Image (cartoon, rainbow, N blue to C red; front, side, top):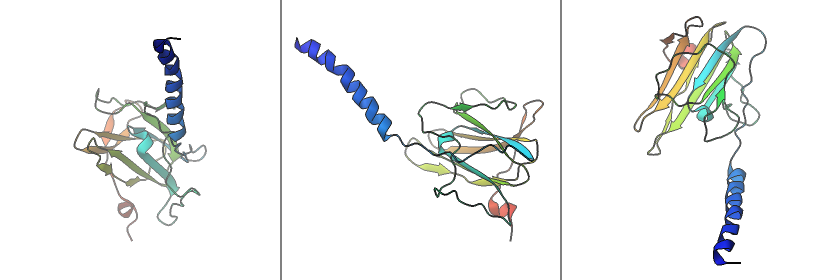
Length: 183
């Protein structure tokens, strides 16, 4: 067997080894976000950075959120992947400007009338971490859209209510737990 043939024969082994090592090292992100299936519901869409966004709900000022058994807030998508993820439940789509937001999307049914916390985060190209946490009280049968994006220097976290007839987006103020539950 020539040296060239031996080298070519080894290439598939190296590629498979690298691929398997990559699979073993990837951490699966546990998804505790479950659709609300009964009672009053609202719809939520996360746009961009779904693997770095956590969402928890169904709590109120007098009934604080209880941390899941694993001890962290639920991520909105179940696995860490480099490719965009699209979880489409058929909610009315808003018109997004081309090329501004990342391609990944995730849609969920949440409890209306209770507090919903969202914590998006993302790393900028220089390694800085951007985060923003906010709380809203979704209203029955309404659609909310949380948009995450960044350029080289800044992170942008935006909240919109989407008109379910026209798809028009109305910007909303992001509120904190203290805003919603003053003592």
